[in-house]
Length: 406
Image (cartoon, rainbow, N blue to C red; front, side, top):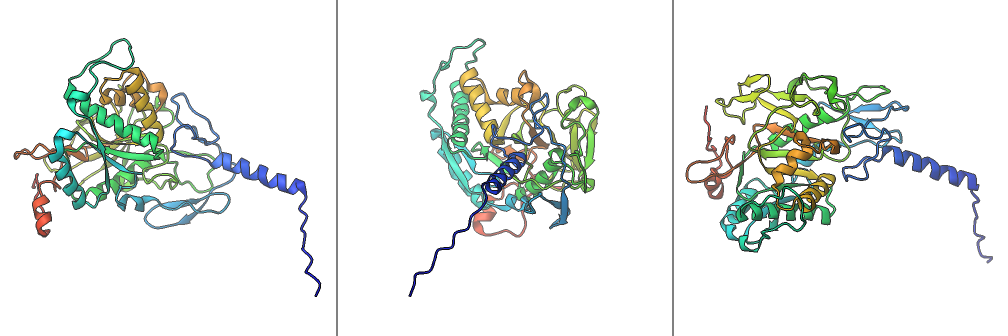
């Protein structure tokens, strides 16, 4: 028997080169990631360093998907999946949840383990260093150096280790928490609503056959367009293009989820987008809560979602890879002993570094709060995880204790 002849298929060189050129062009145009330095959307950057959207020449087609939104179908026909379900996982849709802890606070570690188990959260510990081992003087000599107390420096150092972990492990994003926090039993419901609201603020609108990307907040890419806030009611929010990188949208840098209060962007913040999503009523908010804004006091269990503006403190926040690198750089090299809160204010628009153009989003009231103990409880948290921990371990889950009953 004669051996079978091998079949040789000759492909013209021009066809091969044409395929690679076409693929490279498409990949370059559609590549859009949260990893900081590799963001590319063909439109370049505006004056604030944010991505400027391209003018599309290929109409985007749409197909109905789950929920009340639509999913974009990119030109090659590959559907962009709905990432909202990621909020339901053990890390709330982030790469990791990193919890900072100092060696002298092992009791906090114990209760945090129970609280996380209660909420089915998967946490990774970031070990701080003892107070006496913190460096009293900065590593880099610069002007206007600050020297906070050792306890404060130890806490800040632990958060720096968390940021370093994000960079070292090349995580696309991570949620960083302090070890004494409390949150509502309904945290995932709150985070789901938060994700839909942040998308409304930063994702392009799902306008069928549109040749240009537009946004629900007209000041998102150009804050100088108006000094008035663009108010969007949650129940009336428009459909947006499904994000491809994160449940919370594609281009965020910092999500400030635990803070001591802040202002809302308005006339006094010309460099910040003015859009805000209004949720009313939010049953996780106490009826007695009054939210102060630049346009007056808001009652009726009102919750706001907006861009960060001069936060007073930060103890629960998510960072993108780009934000982690910038924070690590600013605090480690520019001013090693400065508070991380100061760096957040500067990078999110409350200081001199507005040109960096970080996209920082938040909600008021805060979703995470410090647990005071001794009967003091926590602010803004109704169905407290910590207050209901005894019921949880006993298996008594019939009726939760409400810190702020109606």
